[in-house]
Image (cartoon, rainbow, N blue to C red; front, side):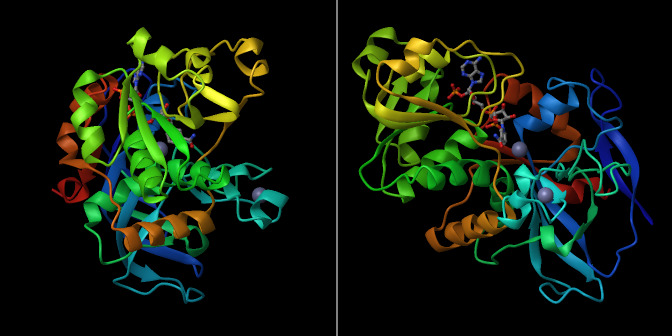
Length: 349
Ligand code: NAP
Ligand code: ZN
Ligand code: ZN
């Protein structure tokens, strides 16, 4: 065991504060990682505040982890000391159910081990995330990270990246497709970059007029202010595909109305409140409403390799851990450009 510095919440209402946790002594299958950067996902906030149901406390959030390998166990050949690696939203799964066998461990029938706010495979040892200086993870759940890209801007790929890449691939978004990305935050801005790289005609649907120039600079072809009823009307029946990344209550019916016949809206945003859907939003044009959760290990590696090949990274504001509580408040105000990333060296002081 080694005692390491981290930041934790002790319950749903107190701010993040310094906390020490034990990391296990690396076993034969493990990789011990010196965490260099960790992204701040809106899911960290939802869970720190028990917005999705009761959380496990104390909680050390963080599932967008990049760092360097400090040591590897005797049975690990894929990684060696000094390699750049990443860890995303889960650190284990049953490995035998149909989803695990298919490489879609995020849908494990026996429940994957979330990187934090969850339990190891033994279902009793709590997991602690990346707002920390070190982590020990089974090598099957560790990703290879290219030396080519700026590391601080790679961290958000481990959740925001894979969560947007996976549905674009699953729904076969391709050259010329008219797609809309709803919400330009951490997930949304990665969705824009992937959509553009896949050759789609990309529209950003945002409730923040100030984000138009940034959306265009990221490669979006159009910007639609979702509060502008007239503009929304002009886009009725326009899109093949919509990716909804909004973190708070939003009217799905308004967006479904923008889909063509057979168009699909995929939800990745996870508002803590139920959203009513009218059957008529779907029936009239045989539309579909779907959801998607992060992505499996194989696809996450594919996404990281795609990013290295296409020079895709996240737009980030790097912060020391001491600014984490202010960062949460800014995320809640949709004032993030476009992902906060913690410089984990600040946890060592
Ligand atoms: P984020 O950076 O806060 O982005 C969310 C964006 O939604 C905001 O920037 C804003 O964009 C829009 N928005 C926020 N509040 C709104 C409101 N009241 N009305 C309309 N639009 C609003 O969050 P994120 O980290 O990208 O995460 C987004 C959501 O996805 C969260 O719920 C998170 O938990 C979830 N998530 C899901 C998965 C998954 O696997 N499915 C993975 C990661 C995260 P505009 O200013 O452009 O409107
Ligand atoms: Zn996340
Ligand atoms: Zn499984």
